Length: 280
Image (cartoon, rainbow, N blue to C red; front, top):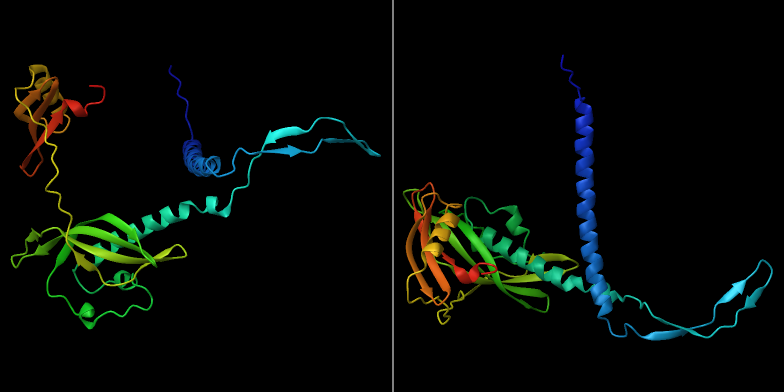
């Protein structure tokens, strides 16, 4: 007759909670290690690190009197004292990241119109903001920001000026949405005591255009059969019906173009190149 051991659910639950607690401790330990490593690097690179100093001879003591011990001066490497500048060196980087996040968030909310102006948008401005009356007018259409990305940051007297590109989707009379052109604005972000706020209305600027950059891989012969076979095997990870539509080679390097699709029925040409494969 088979015997089965029963494990109470409370025991399993306790073990599960202990596992989660251990995971949290490990994550906290990794974060602490990163901070210590950053401060350590700053300390090692600090001016004056590595200088030596002469220490006075050690003194031996008894229960009644202190007797000097004769020895030569001991020379050792100083440990140096971490300055406040070292400890706060991370602050400018964090402030810039905060300004970028605030700018992208602001552009997304500012150019999205799907009802009354949200309180989050109004509270994003500095406390003494003087917004125009047109800002509070009721919108007549619907517009959504599909994405917003910062691409340039420069410091200002009060914080940062962040350049942000974005694209909007606007609703047509028939209820469909049309993707608009990429636009760009510069956002002035005030930074104070770790907080960020929008210091003015967005400033329209021209989006970055890079028409002079070259770098397309040129080929003068067909890719090898094994390269095409490897590409199809790799493409199967993304689309079982992937199809090779073109290939080329130049010397030992090769490039294979294939298409992948999704449930919409649309297909997109993508590429696999030998010069992007690690160890190739």
